[in-house]
Length: 403
Image (cartoon, rainbow, N blue to C red):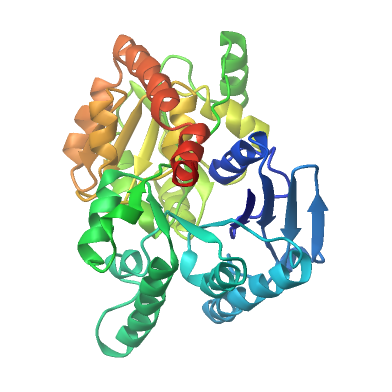
């Protein structure tokens, strides 16, 4: 089969680790011909180029700046995405008849490109749904359903509905996502909506005690405490105010140590807390060398997940997979609508609390200071990952429609 994959993620090789690159490797392994469009933002000053390999090609389109820029530039860049992707397909893949187009979040920016290939090649279309937009923006107060801002919501909501209509199949991250999508989009047939979870090709991670001690010494992290790590985006969706409350509530807890590593729109709010309070059992990192971050993350005891309590849509952060890959138990503090806590607790590889209850969070922290409990949960985490969330699982779910 000829596969076209459209994404906004910037990568130059499918040998890189990640939920999309790992999935594309599965298609290549099974001898499909894979073409990928992975754009690069204008600020990187890289010309359009086609990277050709034996079984796959990556078209590096140049697009406008979307991340870390002002709202006006982001808006203009987003609105021009569809035409740029479509032009890229016409210019570089005109001689290929695609059987399947796979596209990922946010899909509303890629509609015209998907529609063009679907009509041109009679291709089947598969949406990997990772964000339910614009409802997630409504939940966080970024846009409103009424008034002048309601016009923006109406525009995005009509785009969202049209991409669902265009999709032959929609793969959701969890059962709660499936249920939400069908509840609020009754026009969709349940036959086309399924679970196709975030997944990876798990690496074997073995952290020797000497290596752990070395990386902890380098970053002044104690060896005799239970180390909790949050790594990833530090933005509004993560509910940073609650994270700060949790750090404050544990500032005199001598059993634990917190590492927060990442970047995002709320980073400065966290930095202000660290600068003012100088907690002795926590550290904040913005930029770490990639290998150092990976070694540090894999040397910790518990992985943290935070989601804003206001969410009505069921998020399922892919951050979970890196913790499971490292055989690490998970503590998730989230809204009530996601089922990530349910999955974690049923799989017995972590604990959950609501991201508005600091007292409950502290109870879970105390529970996870038990080394034997952590060890068993870590084993369970790795097993659950291998049984449910490998890239091969996602590949089989998609290809099941074509057997």
